[in-house]
Image (tube, rainbow, N blue to C red):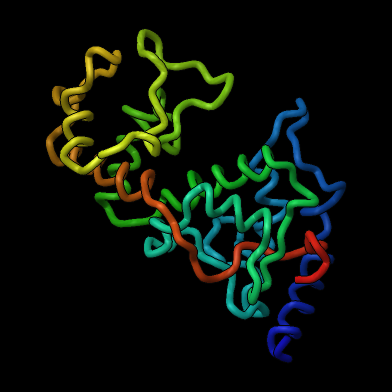
Length: 236
């Protein structure tokens, strides 16, 4: 390992080990026993990525390369839930990112990845992207779920509307088809249209948000995601 990277890793490890309450008791769930992804992010990620997911942590100057900025619009198409979960689980060679597969269960890792995607990644972008995200949350998320993969187990669908499918598994969702689905709906599936409630520009913003943020597939992304504690295999 190059001297500069070794020094960065040692400094960042010291920062994590001195974090105190952030890792106290390795708390991973809410008082009622449910997985709390916000708590997971605080305990395992914020020391490097910052409380706002933008990489502005006290550890950033000691990490080479620096922690990934989840709010960077350029990373939005790549930072899918699947990719975030994989890097959280396995780590990323060549960076300060370690894997957490021995500390976090599969369900915890998935919940954390969804939280990062919804809380930080999807809030990036320009005005049109932000409007599309907001409108999707208002009109679509109740049935399609916050990340387009349908409602999670135990969630209650909107009254009078059938649970919607996982959008990432629907073939042929080009821009025109998504616009039509948002505007006109699909009566046979119990899906309403919103042409009367939304302006054409807003419908297009929702369609672009769905395609660019929810349907994007990532081959990979540079940078780190987190650091601290003990690596999953003791080799990173």
